[in-house]
Length: 183
Image (tube, rainbow, N blue to C red; front, side):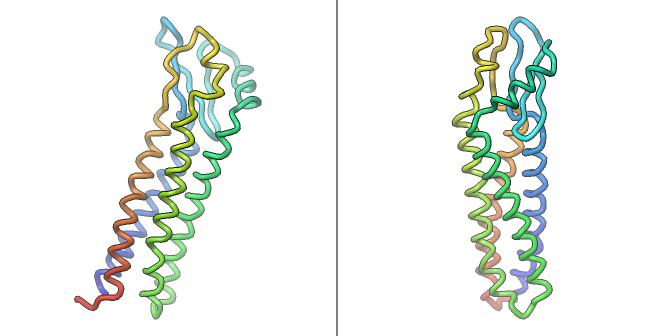
């Protein structure tokens, strides 16, 4: 059982880091990256905030936000759900310290939290990677822009998804050791 207490601490730290990385990725502006042809000037567009079109005024960003693709809302919803579950998982860990008599029962739910968090992150990323070039006419229809690619925010969210995958293995191991008296 002592290994499950150690696992619980490590799991809590891992989920806290995953939550931070998820939030950073979601709220940074680098989801899409593009450049101007024959120039080193670059532009970017975020999912929640942030927009810059090279050599253009704020009206281009306003037009983008007014006509943004509908699939973005679905991707953001999955990321928000993952963040909510990360917060719930942290609260669950906190409650397991307060209600220490029920430690085993609390530990058996950790894999569920991790699987759901990972599923929501994967779903959001699948939508983004599958559609980030779709409905981007403001960029793709303009011959002065080139190379519309995923930006650094997508890479950060990939890292959050990787940590969520690791949390599944850690949660299963912690749950397993909650029933054992090996120490």
